[in-house]
Image (cartoon, rainbow, N blue to C red; front, side):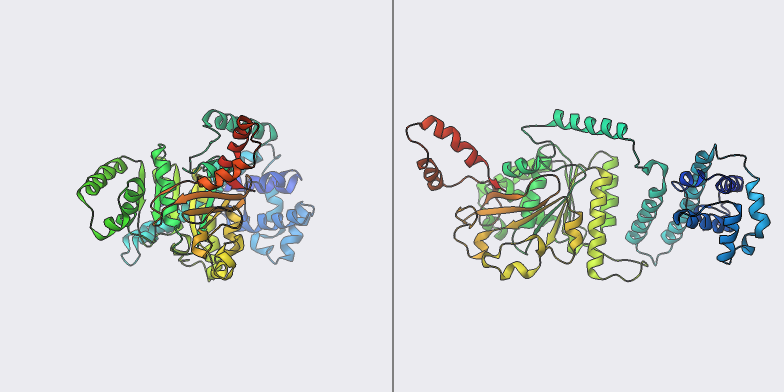
Length: 483
């Protein structure tokens, strides 16, 4: 740290606060909302406040005599200046009338000192070429996040009248923005929109599957739909090169034969179609980052920067278990704890930026041993924290890959059938969302039951009332998710 920088502090405020705590029983409940021992600049004042805080938490009476005895019990009385120092503090203030203002000011001084120390440390590391630039940026971001938690603007306590006003205001916004029941960002699959009302701000959404089931293609489809609806989408791919994602986007949006595109055997018409599609996709408000060493802190910093420019409405992360989980000097953690920390940070991105986050995740091998290989919520790999932090968990399942000719639950033929199993939904119902896809997963769309299914359903209706039967059959066809 630069030795020429004068640290801001206010000993008179510290003495006034401690004096108020020694004199009035109502003072500590106020001070405890703002202050911790380390927020006092003077070491002696830290020891005194720590003793008072401990007594308050234990429900003991606080006055000059009891605090003196507590410091003596802790072996710190002489270190703070003896009993006379405690008596002196009590004479520094007449009442606790301005205690809250004093506490806020003292907290502000502490935050400024922490900023000076943290930024000085970041500056030292930035000029030291032995530190990776990415690590310096991430450490600085973490430091700012930690300090931000202490800032006055992060207070979340609200009276009920304020909460109700905010709740109704948010409901009014949903009402105004609702389009056919979709209040968030559209998913592109009608049945999923019916289940979730679209991707919701502040939600962490998990899409989990075994390898090669199609997580990335489904996520790209969702990102493309969001961008086409005018929302700024950030797609962070730790697994795949950006150009490979570009290939898949072109195939998602065109009728080009995937095999022709991948082998370089496209005909003239297909090549013209690809160029036209690429020009259309280039206009979308979508950004892709394919840094292979991305951490959640890196993604968080990038998303914050884009959000400050009004260019981040939804974030996709492909995928959790590949994210850089280096812990630096924070001690030893096992893999499960690392995953829990990363998942928690993904949830923080959603809440802080007030946008949906779609986080892809691997499933463990347990589903491979079941008939049909149908996944379950317990298959989430490596950490129960994924399930705990998620607002919505979608398990991607393609029953044809499990050797099933017919889906057991719906009775639908499995050829081209995809299922998003909503195994957890914090704000709504769970169930199965059906969609259709081609063999290469480069075409994803709403599932429409085959004609034989429609005929079988219609035969069950009363033929004497064909019009009424037709009306009753529509919800069955349109409702492609089940409880």
